[in-house]
Image (tube, rainbow, N blue to C red):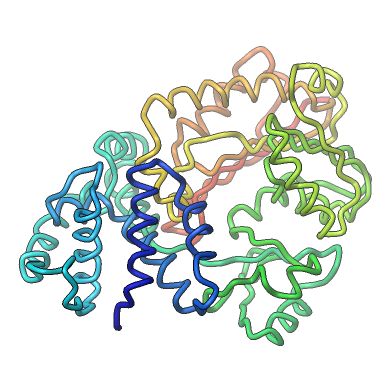
Length: 404
């Protein structure tokens, strides 16, 4: 592989924004990919994958290169040189790479890779937390999987098409996919591609959604004609899935504290041909109280640490802080207490997170069921998904029923 100067400069600029200015990796990469209209898909792929790879292994590469954050540009080039050397890429004779000790880099890698928190590149506190909650063996396997690049998985929009027709349509646009067992609406890309440029996407035939995330809406057991509330809807990936499972019939209320996210949902709903969604911003307790005892089904896709989706957000390893996790657990508790009151007698709710920590998952459900509000509910079933077992995002979901 030959390194091209303009692509390498883009990578260095991206790393500077992520590591030194605290910007989010996905947003930075979106900006970088718009930088040069002449770049082809291989160029864009190189920029995105290289930035993600160095973010993913920041701690390991920094220890090998013997540099510390905040990184000045020479340090960023040193991180890049470590990445390239470990990938077996020949370094060109640019000034940034003079005196790069390639043999020493490989030796340091072998030595440092013996320590899990350095090998998998996570902060000490996160490693201790993972071990205390999942145990040494399970945490090690999960971390290793979370450092792999995630597959691109699509969810077919059954309001407009079916899986077979979507597969054929994408094939006609040069994108090969395969079916996934146990995921009725999923297609997985055989090779990464920009699916957002396809006619199929513009026509609302699919959404990009990880296979684990697709299981959540199914878990809620919705039927056409029901009154369903999605209370942490965000930009609405699961809301749109619920709409298709409801066949556009009934009432689907999407709620969130961020109006900007619901605006994105509005655009997506239009493209998906969904017209049974009503959107409500949670600015006070009023919209919640209005729905007390009214919902046949309630989805609480709770805010969480996101430790099940580090493959997608590798910079979260450095942005997360222990106090954030403690605070988010309190929020999860409050959300369960407040929002569960919307479920009517005999109705059901799903509590879900994209975390792998029992303290955010099973323990929260147990705590809720022993509380005053939760004593009216019973746990029907729950599902814990670990990335190293499933190959997809780490997730948790619990189905609870309110006694009638």
